[in-house]
Length: 381
Image 1 (cartoon, rainbow, N blue to C red):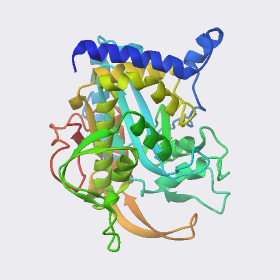
Image 2 (image 1 turned 135 degrees about the vertical axis):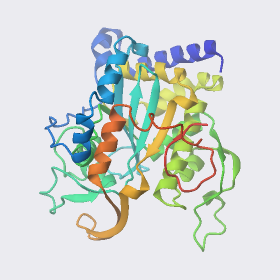
Image 3 (image 1 turned 90 degrees about the horizontal axis):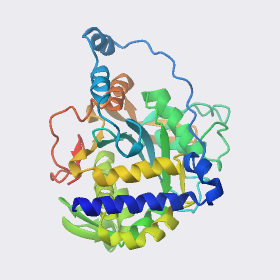
Image 4 (image 1 turned 180 degrees about the vertical axis):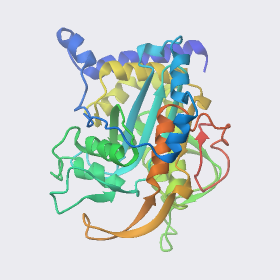
């Protein structure tokens, strides 16, 4: 897209976010910076004892974080944003209009660099078996799958009395187990996702391999099969592709990333400009977020300035996770889970937070590389 068109689109999205605030001029100044939902309010961070690997890193001299911070001093952040922002992005599996219930079907920890600029997206597998804080007085629940933290935090369950509802408890769970401390959050349910894709006229995606979600008795379910090659998908089809787990959790995350890349590509095409009022209407009151209109405008301004190669998707190395089954008090049955090497995952999250992983690695293979395994890092095509 020509630079002039990108600038025009950025300005239009800036106007859209002003409308999203839905306030009159008298309230504008306060509302512009006011969060659209309750803040996360994570507990104060306590000092953790150094792991052997961290101790070696510290003894080696100046850290990557220190060097990066020094290099950034002379470079201003784009769009009036902070130097970096971390965002907890959640896809809820509920098809209802609201957020009383719902598991976190998609969990992404997003690092947004307003200086470089670039965006890094880390997938947290929903089946990770973790400690869930602040709800043990309800049926003795102290552990569960990571995606259950979001369910237990939302008001329909009535388990969690802290800040931020479902996103708040999920953020506290990520902090407790992995040291991930998002600045903000945004959660969208399946209904909102389907509406958004339909409003923009669908998305275009190319699959390097077939994705087949049919069971043995479902040969007639054409909606569960996606052949290799190009596809134009409506909202329901895009949602279905992102939910099929034919090759396992990691491959499904790869499919979801392809959908996100296609959605980003479509949102910033000229054909979408006349549909901005409908897009605003789709999101208004239909998402959970603590972002302010000002912060949304900063993100909307940044996105058109990102090249495809500036957006990186990554996941934890498969070797650090172990498949298992365990009894889950919350659902009163044995469930499939991932047990994790938490120390190693914490170190990777620390590296992710300062931009040292995965972006410091050699260029990863393109997301178009035909592989159903869904491991490693990838970029939008």
